[in-house]
Length: 156
Image 1 (cartoon, rainbow, N blue to C red):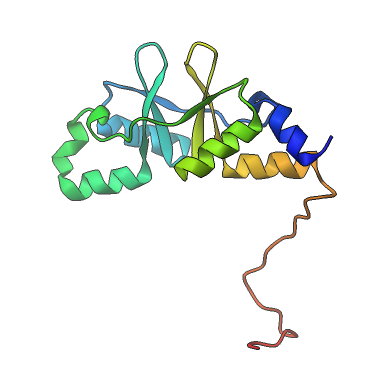
Image 2 (spheres, rainbow, N blue to C red):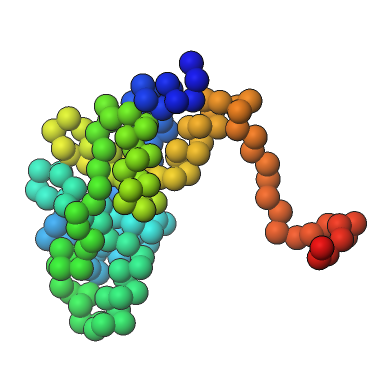
């Protein structure tokens, strides 16, 4: 099976999905930041009482909130979240996921179950790993170095 067919047939659930850290819609900004720090992540999903994603809160938003007014830390996170957050179901194809990420210029997409509850997170790195695992001969992965070797010439 070729790359195109694989992307059109494989479900998102076939990928290695990341655990999703969530915060309640009524949580305070301060609580969302603490959750992000505890889990060492840059984004949390904001979910309603049924566990459905309604938005996301990111490190970038933390900076905006703090620059605007430090008293905003005690406001509900729902007042500062990005909404709506793009989602795919576990049964959607990898091709649909890639299309959703490309069209929305997204780094991460929330994965939901058949009832729309948030279950996982998938990002650009996950897509690249999926492709590299499925097509190791077609995808050549090399370590990138930040330093030039002494024997390499600099310039043209």
